[in-house]
Image 1 (cartoon, rainbow, N blue to C red):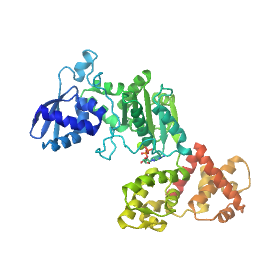
Image 2 (image 1 turned 30 degrees about the vertical axis):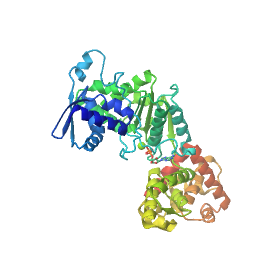
Image 3 (image 1 turned 90 degrees about the vertical axis):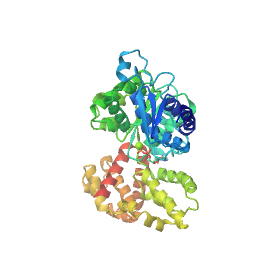
Image 4 (image 1 turned 180 degrees about the horizontal axis):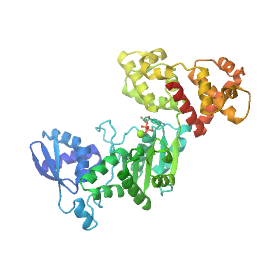
Length: 463
Ligand code: ADP
Ligand code: MG
């Protein structure tokens, strides 16, 4: 292969990996040689080479193959004078991130990219357009929108937290897409904390801290997903903290996510917790029935395109929204399966069939929980007596847990309202209905209740 062919390959790459990835990672590569099945380049730092190797090797090999050239390996020669140590003592002109090689890592809209999401590739289905907003996530959504407007930084960081599969990563991707659409020059870096750590360790090992620091400190927007991965990893935390401070000082937006509030992440240093808390901390509540149904309805269109001919009977979506409550990802998984079955079998899927096809997903939810168990668990949870739970005392200390227990009884058992009413000290069934509604509303508006219900539900299912 000659430099000319490399030139052609890289032009192809440009179209495939997107302009920004191209200018950041591919353009600076200097073609050196091709021998055997190995393609070598001169680069400005180890860091750069590693990054290209990790994220772009497949694409490079693929394009080379299109020109009839078999490449299986990339190798990199670090140019003299700009290795980490040299750069640190020499002029402050780190090559990785100087003005001509922006370190933007932006959404890549090329249709040929793999479905898997790694730290560089943003999922094109995860945009604001596809994000369904409901009470449990409306605050998080509003804050994400605000950040995505790209105006002056008013809160830093934006810290999103919530249970697994509730849309944190989706929102981060949506922000990245939106920022890029509004301002193609913005340098947006989305990375998982795990990859951040991995890159950090690698930079340490290869003595390329300069390249590492420059990369992370020259972005306009930094998003680090699942921050708990750096908890307990002292050196990584330290570096993260410095990066964080440097960006905050420059008024660059930082967006972080986690499954718990800053103060509840084990092993996270106090000073980091306090920095995180100085921004805007927002949680995404467990989904409500309405939100789940909304998400299913939105996804229905997408799935209908993916599985031509699939037909899902009325009531199936409601059934799923009712039964699969923990995690939107599971909900999507259930839907995929139903669409696939229908498409393959050429038959409409009704609720009975759905029950059969989703047996494994539903069986957790299926364990029969009794009203007595619910009452005991709820009383325990709120440290009150079951007799108080069943009593007619109106004090909120008893009334709220009572309503929670009514709600769970309705949700987790097949009992009718009059049956539940009888089990709750012979009340009227309208009282039960009122209690259930009340808790439904509270789940949307009161984080404490939402968490209590979620916890109790899990505890009851697990026993
Ligand atoms: P998390 O990062 O909080 O664990 P994800 O963002 O990965 O969760 O969401 C899991 C899946 O559920 C994704 O496919 C995502 O698109 C989908 N999802 C979650 N919340 C919503 C929502 N409000 N609207 C549409 N899809 C959602
Ligand atoms: Mg996530």
